[in-house]
Image (cartoon, rainbow, N blue to C red; front, side):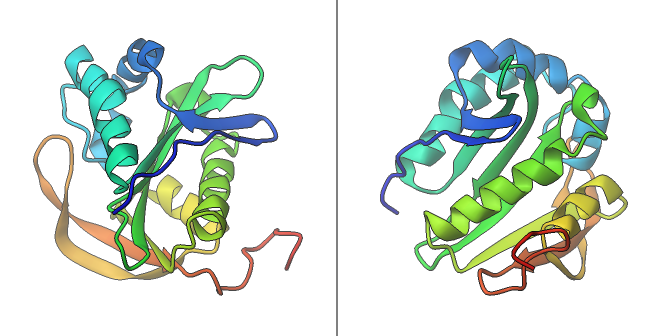
Length: 190
């Protein structure tokens, strides 16, 4: 894969940007919330060294090698970290996976739905992706809601296909969105 040029996207109250070294402490703090590793692959306990590795090495590497695009989702005015949203495992064939988590203080405010919408539009428009896959541990209803609000189609359940932060294998829902799918509910293009 050719490298991806890191970009910044402002979408109303949200600003999606590549991770910066000064985000380490905010990522570490956000990931102390047990709900994040409960539903994601983030290790538990989540140490400061995990945040530092993600922000300063892992996220920039995926941009550089073209296999991912990891964004900090921050308040467009205050720069407060609200969430993380990323394209993962981008392939030469135009496939990718979307992954995200939301900091506890930002939950219930539509942050994740708006961030997923913004990244999905950018992925299809700017990158020309052919398919974005979404996965979440069965029971992660908040992730399911954000995906469905953005037109992702739930396709089924994969048995023990996701390893969560504490190393357990759990069943996961899988879905996808294609560029030609109808606009999601509430989209003005609908």
